[in-house]
Length: 393
Image (tube, rainbow, N blue to C red; front, side):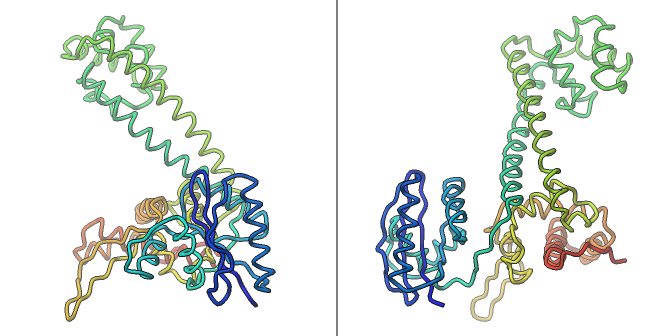
């Protein structure tokens, strides 16, 4: 079957495209199309014209992973019956450098380079399910919100150190729910010291759901009376506003996680059968992997996650200790490491494997890396066969 190769370099407002024939002949020199409906139709017409010109009946299209700029174009191609291959930008960059010693990089050159890479690449386009695409949107937004949550908690900790530095000594964290409620009402040691003990007791009791009683209220009030905290109305206002932001963010995270759990329950992935791995980590792993049939072996999945060790060999020398490559999906790598940590606690199979690596004298994080690699092999197996995980003694 004859095939044409469509390389697309994606940008914000426009895209550049180059179309090659089966033998590498240029069917359509690199051209620019706008990032709108008219431009998409122009691309589709150019592809159909190239098919007719080459007498081909197969299309292989590819583009770089460029975040959200490519999403609408990918959706258009899929709706038109064309399944594009999305390349890692590093892969495209290395391929372009291997083709020439000249430092030439333009959008049109990149488009042709992607088309040539399509000819040499063994990857085949695999359609992503609607549920997986939705999961990817939800989980990546969750990751951004979690990052914002961390920054807000750091900001709260900084402000508490200014306004009531003694408070963390009598609670787990100034960002815990009961302390957030207290500080939202009384955002400084000065205000807590001036508060009536019955009001402070009722506030803490309700906020902690009965865990903090009058004794805790008295302890906090006494600390507040002796506090070195600053008298700063500006910092108090900043703390109140930051706490309100955090509460709003936490509510959004609850909504997101509920939507994620609904989709994961519908997919009913066998990853959930691994002890310690819950719906959120399962969602991230599934969203980043996409269709498991994109990978012909566990090693390729490991490389996609960036968990494979780098190799350095020159002459008779071969490095024995090399770091992870870390060129793959950051989200997938994080999820797999977290899943490996939990599995090594709750699953006998992974716990024994972790203990073996630790007994060999490996550092905890090195041992965790080995567990994550074992987890990748297990995930590849159960997703390929769609069979539940069985714990081995």
